Length: 401
Image (cartoon, rainbow, N blue to C red; front, side, top):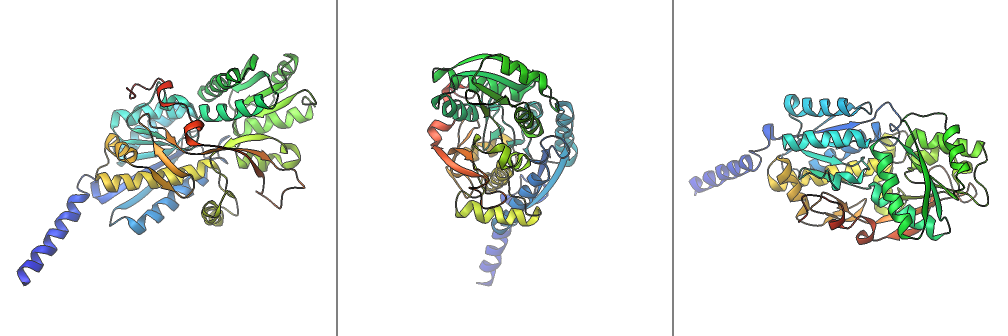
């Protein structure tokens, strides 16, 4: 009897060690590669690091001994810097996954590195839809939002409400080009037209020449294909120059709650925007957001922060289930079953790497409607998962057959 008990205990030890045999040191290392000092620092940055740390702590309750280590670095919004960090992390520091990645140019560069290394990229802060289109990889999952989802929601909402002639003021790199392309598709499907476009570099402070071109175009919709500090500056100058009026409206294609907070409700009231997450959406989002805010001096999370938490949790559970850190196998595991996520609801990861879930269109409240800081949105439209994201067979992803 004693011998069988000892044998059983030994077998248990062997099975536990075998379970994580392909996870070096029984530790999963995740790098938060973000903008900690530039125009996306409020949307992502420190908050994304805190969100990943929260995921690691929550996973510890179910990890069965699998440990998690979180690293972080600033990519400075430079693709060459981002790819060099990714390569060093994997080669020298044993990083198994990289998460967040605001700045689509950086994300596309890191996407290539992670495929080469067969490690996982969790694009929770990257918006270009090309990550699940022509540049899709078996090692990448894109969480929360993308330019097709944003363009589809905003293009339809604004065009259906009467905004038929559009002019774009967009970033001159991957994000701006993808936002403009994907929104144009949605506008034209609704019978609208694009009269013109102008591009600006990241970090622009003076938008006067761009806005005057938009005003002179005769368009009734000025669409901002940018985000972060640039979008905030543009909207402030639109108000300063009194460009909007009875016959002109603004479509801010990629705004987040920190941008609304920076603008203030007086300037932002009435804006339509599309997101997949809002802290005050339901009991589950409120509970998690209050935990987050307690670590962030009262700041409520953005969609990037929520997506970093959810993508990190889903990844860790997939590593545990697949018993490997090989990127293609972990992503295959993530695709194997629907994920019941506390922040995004029912989530399904498709073959192209797109995590599909509900999206929403919100309108920014007036100062009179708001009950306090971060009480900024009212729900206008709920977009079900099968309508929210680009159809699987239309993105040009080579993984889709």
